[in-house]
Image 1 (cartoon, rainbow, N blue to C red):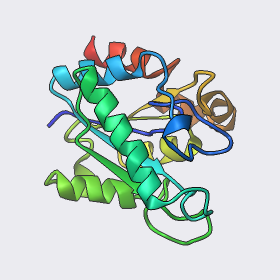
Image 2 (image 1 turned 90 degrees about the horizontal axis):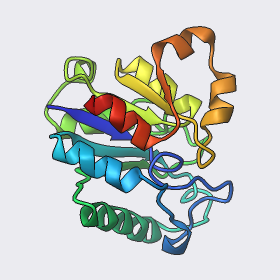
Image 3 (image 1 turned 60 degrees about the horizontal axis):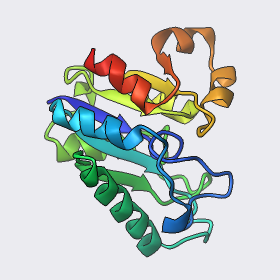
Image 4 (image 1 turned 180 degrees about the horizontal axis):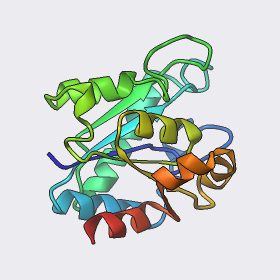
Length: 186
């Protein structure tokens, strides 16, 4: 299996300090839909793993999140891409769950749903593309190939300042999902 796991906000769509609370606030980053389509057409299974604490904070409901994700999936389809599944953590930072990145719960679900063990991400050459320190930590802990997106539409530039030199040496730093896709497909 060729597997690419994407963070949502800051990688696929523009990040917002006020959360993406409805479909009107969801705006794809230029080139991200085409990148997902190119990965799909190259035979990659695409999953999304995203923290959505706005639910726990009362900013939006699970039904609203479902509408946002339906818009994402349908927009990707219009470009010829496919998202296999969207995995999300609805909990707040202090809820003590196992699914809030960098904890492994979302990746455990991905592994289970795709029929492999948690320690098999590296065997499948899984790729994780994110924009936060949490994303980098989870990707490295699960032995994925990790890309850090640093565009103005992400938290990546701030994340870069938070990473250790060792972490920076273990990841690939890119402007956006389109740039990561060009590297993956080259």
